[in-house]
Image 1 (tube, rainbow, N blue to C red):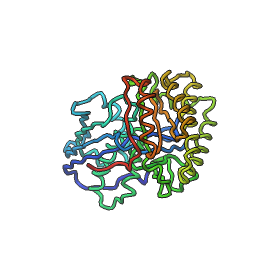
Image 2 (image 1 turned 60 degrees about the vertical axis):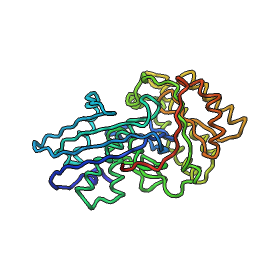
Image 3 (image 1 turned 90 degrees about the horizontal axis):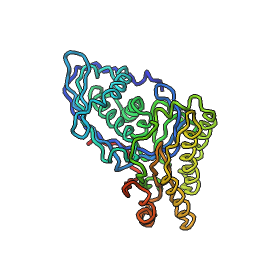
Image 4 (image 1 turned 180 degrees about the vertical axis):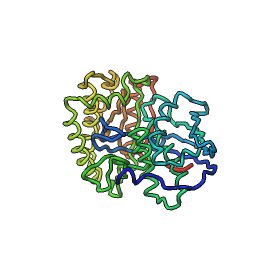
Length: 357
């Protein structure tokens, strides 16, 4: 599908409209690191959609007779003008695809179910929730918009705000980026895994260990930029593409041993790219490494399928089947909480995707 397919043709007059959507964050198992404009990934990725870690966004659309688009943004009840530069860029990018938005003034109210700097990608859930509100308005303007088009275009718009937000629309597992596994795969939007996902993964657990709640010294956007001249970039893109093919097969069969091997390799490969870029940087902390070693020791001793993954930061996501939840949570409380800032960690699990509230 081409970008032009997403240009709205609605010409209805602007009318007041109020909507609210809840969108989840996601945790990538196959990492995307490196992109071209506008938010096109250099390799495909695959992620778990989370359940409890969500952003809820309400948008009040008011007709604006002046024809000059404007908006106000409130986060957790407080006006936040410091968010305007990022949102301005987002609206500039998406306005060619939803030209009707120029007829409105928007009041945006957003809140998260998880704390700030908690190791959960808030930009993904925030941009997804906002994009779903925009698409809800478009669907009211154009009754011919199908459910498939609705979710594809919401993912398309969200991607233009934050790349990983493309994967925060549907669940429980989504793929983003052209690949040889799905004929419907696209760099423009994410697609669901499909009905052949093994049942064990539909209730998989994700416990986020808050190793370091401070701001990262290098943002993800800066990290993506460093892939342009990275000496191992092309090899990394090939590795991720191969891993995606292998992981999809393993997630169809329910092979947890193979799943663990690829997921942990992906996490470490992501950080290896950071440590070998120019300039180089390290986002893992000593407690990150202590947790990883304890996870490996626990898995060897108990044979339980507990594994870790990492985003671009120090915090650790522990992934495990629901059937092992009780024993693993005891291990987390007794052995791993000591490595978390303030002993804090968050429980989550794989979810079904965004919903209207």
